[in-house]
Image (cartoon, rainbow, N blue to C red; front, top):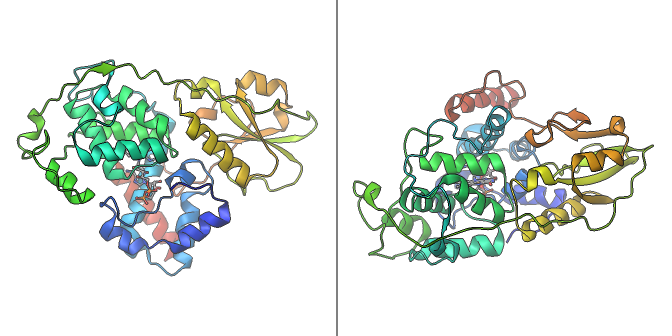
Length: 364
Ligand SMILES: Cc1cc2nc3c(=O)[nH]c(=O)nc-3n(C[C@H](O)[C@H](O)[C@H](O)COP(=O)(O)OP(=O)(O)OC[C@H]3O[C@@H](n4cnc5c(N)ncnc54)[C@H](O)[C@@H]3O)c2cc1C
C-alpha cells in the first residue's frame, strides 16, 4: 500500500489526485486522500512541488482549500519544531493522565474490542500507514480513555509509521490529549462507525458526547521496549577530496545538488534515532526509498563525529532541520510555503492565513 516510488512516479501520483473530491471525502477511511505523507515526510517531494503541480493542472486555490490547509498543518508543525521540542507539552499538561509509564496490552495486541480500531492497529503494523481519522481515534482512546501518557503512546505510533515525523506525530498526539490545544478530542462509536463504515454497537465508546469524558478504560500495562536496531549495510567509502551531500531520513530530495561530483550519504544519526526509534520495516523502507531516488547512495548509521572523521566537513552540506542543527556542515535551506514567516504563532489558523496570502500572491 505504501510503495517505493521515484520522484517521477510521485509526480504521476499527484497528477491522478483529485483535490476537489478530497474536500468532500477526506474524513472517511476510504475517502480520496493523497497518501503523499510518506514521501513528504521523507523530503522526497516538498509541499510547494505538490501545489505547483496541482496549479499547473488548472485547479484554483479556492477549489483546493481543504487540501492546502492540511498541507499547511504539516508546515506549521515543522515551524513549531524549530522553536520547541515536540517531546514537551506545547501549551498545557495532558488533560487526563493516570499512567506515566506502560502501554495498554489490549491496544498493543489490537484487542480493544472496537473492531474498526483493532483493524486500524493491524493496518498500522502491516503497512506503516493509517488514515488521519484512525490516528485521531486511537490517540483519543489511548490518552483520554486509557489515560496513558501521550509521550509513550506517540512513540508507539511513530515506531511503525513510514511517514514517522516527530513534529507531525508528537504535536498531533498533544492536540488530541489537550497538551497542544485548550480542549480534548473525543470520538464516540457513532462517529467511528460513520467514518469507517462499521456498524458495531454496545462498545465502551457507544455513549453520548456528554458521557464520553467519563469513560475510563483499564488494561494490563506493558513496556513497549522499542529500540532502534538499524545498522549500516557496508562500511562507508569516503573520499576526503570530494564534496558530500549528507541526506537524512527527513531529506531525500532527488533534485538537491544534481551535480555529478558529490558523494551521497544517507546518515542515520544514532543520537536522534535512539531517542525516536522506528521499526526495521520503516528503516528498510526509507533506505529503499533513498536508493530508488538517489544514485550511488551509501547508508551510514552512527554518530556525527564518526561521520565527520571520514569527510572533509568543509566540503559537506546538509539541509536545515532541527535534527541537523548542530552538524558542522554547510546548512542549506529547505523548501517552505512561507519562507519568511516572522514570529511563529502557536495556533494553526494565524499561520494558515499568512500562507494563504502568500499562495494568493504567488498564483493569482
Ligand atoms: C495521532 C496522529 C499522529 C500523526 N503522525 C504523523 C506523522 O508521524 N507523520 C505525518 O506526516 N503525519 C502525521 N499525522 C498527520 C496525518 O494523519 C497524516 O499526515 C495523514 O494522515 C497522511 O495521509 P495522507 O498523506 O493521505 O494525507 P492527506 O489527507 O492526503 O493530506 C495531505 C498531506 O497533508 C499533510 N497533513 C494532512 N493532515 C495532517 C495533519 N493532521 N497534520 C499534519 N500534516 C497533515 C500530510 O503531509 C499529508 O501527506 C498524524 C496525525 C495524528 C492525529
